[in-house]
Image (tube, rainbow, N blue to C red; front, top):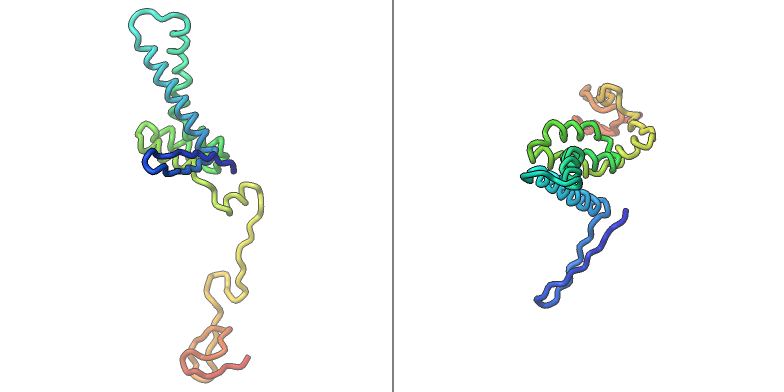
Length: 169
């Protein structure tokens, strides 16, 4: 994982502040700013009264591509990060992105790092289920009766919890 380190100094007492930004976040900020500027600029160009020259017309019609790309930015980030939840993120972004909360939720979900288990499954590793030989498939541990008091105890018990007798195998 690559990081960008930014060092800044304050004027009072010259304190040095070090900010570490992950490269993926840095690229997101660049994409966000560029798409946001282009979306605003193409919208503003389309609102100009009077006729537009060729470049102005091109910029105004580029909003047909840029504005949906800006709207779908969380889905693009999930796709670039190879998220296993890409269809779900795209659905939330498409249907709830019109509300700022839905758009931010989809963006946060796109930035979520996969757990090690999800990562292993993504690369095709077969995960084994934990096996406990003392447990039966229904989840109950095998039991037996105490030979001294007759109470039910675990089959692996060395001492009865009811009468305190030492058990022999």
